[in-house]
Image (cartoon, rainbow, N blue to C red; front, side, top):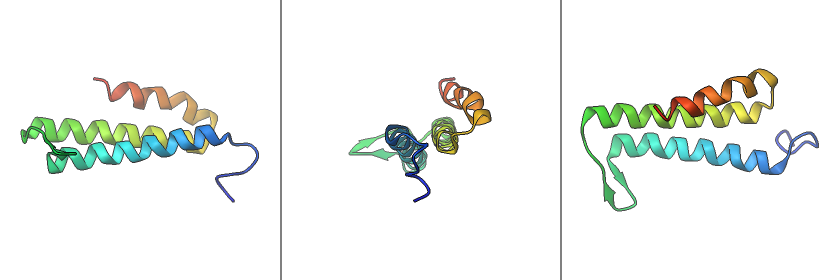
Amino acid sequence: MGFLNPGRNLGIIVVAALMILFGLAEIVTGFTHYFFGITTSAASAFTCSSALIGAFYAAAGMLTLTMKKWAAVNRPGFVGGSNF
């Protein structure tokens, strides 16, 4: 299997998959304004910022899955960019 080769730690794969999943959930929440029974603000600033934060988290998860050195260098920028 491509994801479960001996060079990859299963924990890193799980964390990366969760980062992608939660990033996509953040994007969906930003546009639907509904999260597990909690209604969020419908302001356009919230929609844009929530979608951007989710995109940063999902991109960081995808970079984690690549297991490349250049991705490890850029990943903190994506995670840190979501905390603006």
